[in-house]
Image (cartoon, helix red, strand yellow):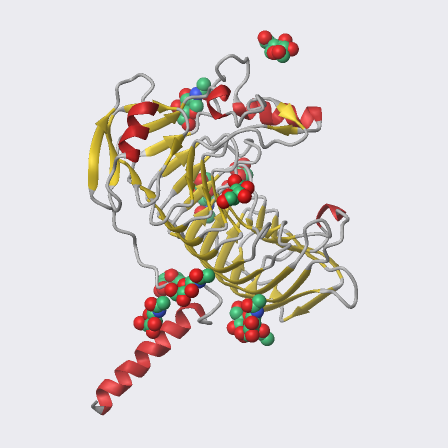
Length: 413
Ligand SMILES: *[C@@H]1O[C@H](CO)[C@@H](O)[C@H](O)[C@H]1NC(C)=O
Ligand SMILES: *[C@@H]1O[C@H](CO)[C@@H](O)[C@H](O)[C@H]1NC(C)=O
Ligand SMILES: *[C@@H]1O[C@H](CO)[C@@H](O)[C@H](O)[C@H]1NC(C)=O
Ligand SMILES: *[C@@H]1O[C@H](CO)[C@@H](O)[C@H](O)[C@H]1NC(C)=O
Ligand SMILES: *[C@@H]1O[C@H](CO)[C@@H](O)[C@H](O)[C@H]1NC(C)=O
Ligand SMILES: *[C@@H]1O[C@H](CO)[C@@H](O)[C@H](O)[C@H]1NC(C)=O
Ligand SMILES: *[C@@H]1O[C@H](CO)[C@@H](O)[C@H](O)[C@H]1NC(C)=O
Ligand SMILES: *[C@@H]1O[C@H](CO)[C@@H](O)[C@H](O)[C@H]1NC(C)=O
Ligand SMILES: *[C@@H]1O[C@H](CO)[C@@H](O)[C@H](O)[C@H]1NC(C)=O
Ligand SMILES: *[C@@H]1O[C@H](CO)[C@@H](O)[C@H](O)[C@H]1NC(C)=O
């Protein structure tokens, strides 16, 4: 090898390393923009209930290929995407979830009602035990949570509000639920009006969410955007998310969540870029880079408590811009002061290259002198007049009150 060649190789390695600052606190796969699979069948909407036709096409599609919804507005009840198969929603096409709770009921006849559990419905689109499945295309999947339910006098979202008044839980379907799967891709599709969490993946290894647009009104309760729950090797990139609850919430309810990259995203109204509150199996090795947040309630949020606490560590935030957010950075080990046996521990959290362009409330809440919230700030510029809510906090570095500029720019799709 020539000297020049050796130098180029060295430079290449340095570039890869500096891309994320650290090479292990991220998705360990080398993720690039997904490619849409070839089509096995194309379907045109009939205008009626197309559930059977879509499900039949999915069940008979060759592995590695996709069923294309190629024109019109489709109405469907719950769908299951089999292992190896994908759904392609073409540009201009809309796939609408029929708002009939009976179709989603898991057997107890509770879907579409209020009770003390809130787990009575299956999702609109499910992938379970799947490998290499996905959802692709520039079309739209509409959860129709704003439309009156069949046989009821209120919509899914109105039911969610009724739960607040009744002090219990709504039984509403998620829009997309992935469980126990591998190598799953969601690419480009627009997801709107989810009755509950928009996309969740449980115990899934290898998950790419790229170029999605997710929308719900700010008032729509529990409409999280993308939730990895006990997942590893996850990339969430180039998305636009504007919803009613957390844009992204990394949780670790039944398994650890680790090796997660969240980069080049833009979030508008909604709750926060969150880790927690359920982190009882540990959340670690996460990088959140290149994020613009405009108009959310919280910006960077790590939240837990003794109810479902655990270790949150090796988390890195880099190049984040926040504007019009009342609580720009909130690291809270005592959220809602919930009690339980699971002590949260937050440490080795690094927050670098941050600009917060409007004043806000910054929160750092630890548990005790021996278990403080620990975070390191580098090159962090906030707006003059901000306030701090701090107890048991071990903060290294400074949040300098000298931010300037009136625009965050835009990452996202
Ligand atoms: C990712 O790419 C880097 C640089 O090309 C390479 O060293 C590494 O082995 C790749 N990792 C995987 C899991 O493919
Ligand atoms: C994550 O991806 C890396 C690189 O492909 C792989 O070595 C590792 O086994 C994956 N993690 C899990 C839990 O499978
Ligand atoms: C529901 O929302 C969609 C778009 O998000 C809109 O086109 C439709 O008019 C709304 N329907 C009702 C009943 O509000
Ligand atoms: C809607 O249904 C609830 C419960 O069945 C009933 O109490 C209420 O009066 C109904 N409201 C309207 C406007 O029909
Ligand atoms: C995921 O699937 C496993 C079995 O494979 C099941 O035990 C678990 O309850 C499922 N979780 C969800 C959230 O559906
Ligand atoms: C962050 O954005 C910059 C351009 O603003 C780009 O060079 C860099 O690759 C991005 N980082 C990641 C992790 O995508
Ligand atoms: C700030 O965000 C809130 C909530 O999303 C929004 O209602 C308000 O119009 C925004 N203000 C500005 C100046 O953008
Ligand atoms: C946190 O990072 C350190 C240093 O890279 C590493 O030794 C440790 O295993 C990481 N912790 C977890 C839970 O991955
Ligand atoms: C802290 O986490 C970063 C990744 O975000 C890792 O590179 C570093 O080694 C960790 N430091 C310690 C002391 O564990
Ligand atoms: C924030 O979002 C609002 C509403 O979408 C938009 O009007 C405004 O220009 C954005 N502001 C910045 C600084 O990006």
